[in-house]
Image (cartoon, rainbow, N blue to C red; front, side, top):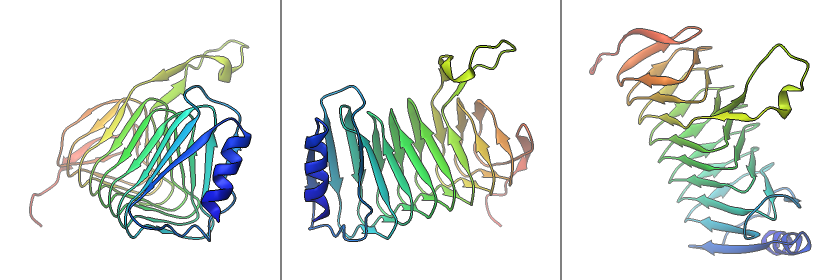
Length: 227
C-alpha cells in the first residue's frame, strides 16, 4: 500500500506521516515518494485528503522529512503527471483544483490554490514565503509564478549564494493567465483580469478587470463586464 510505504520511508528518514482522509484513498498509480533528510521543523507531514480525489499516473510527492509539512488536497481535485515538493512548507488545494502533466508545485512557505483553479501543462509555482492563487484562476501552458529571486550583481560571487529577495504573490479570483506568462515576486493582481501570452508581470498592484500584456506587463485596456 502506497501510504504504508510512505510512512516507512518517512520513519527511516527521521519523520512521520499523519494521514487524514474523508474516504479511503487510492494511491495505486503514484510513483514512489521521494524523501530527503532535510528541513527544519517537527519532522511531520500532515496529509489531508477530501472526497473524490483523483490522483492519476506519474504524480510524484517530494518531502523534506525533517521539516513541518502540510499537504491538503480538497474534494474532487484531479492531479496527473505533476510534482509536488514540500520543503518545510504547506500546499493547500481547495475543491476541484486541477494540476496537469509536467507541472511543478513547490513550497517552503504557504501556498494556496482556490476552488477550481487550474495549473496547466508544464507550469511551475514556486513559493518561498506566500503565494495565493484565488478561486477560478486558470493558467494556460508554461506559466511560471514565483515569489522570490536572487539579486543580480556584476561581481564574481556565485548568484545562488546570495540571499533571496522575497515578496508575496496574490492572483485574484477568476483571472485568466495566458501561455508562457511569468509572474514575479510582489505581484498582486486583482479579480477578473486577463494576462496576454508571454507577458512578464513584475511586482506591484494591478487593479481588477484589466487586460495586461507586454514585457514588462502593463494595462492594455479595461475588460468589459459583459461581452
